[in-house]
Image 1 (cartoon, rainbow, N blue to C red):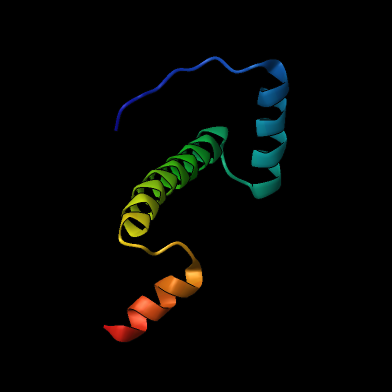
Image 2: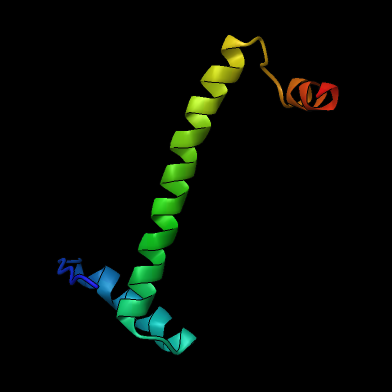
Length: 73
């Protein structure tokens, strides 16, 4: 495991402290989980953008059209 050192504003540190205490976990564990979730969402958004462009190139523009295309397969 690697170590990452970062500076955060005092307000963010206090919020991290409050939430970690409320959850009964360390600030490091909470920050690690928050970063992991953020990266998953960012990855999902990137993938979704690519898939939407590909679908639109294939003439699929709405959720309903996606469902219809899946029914046909």
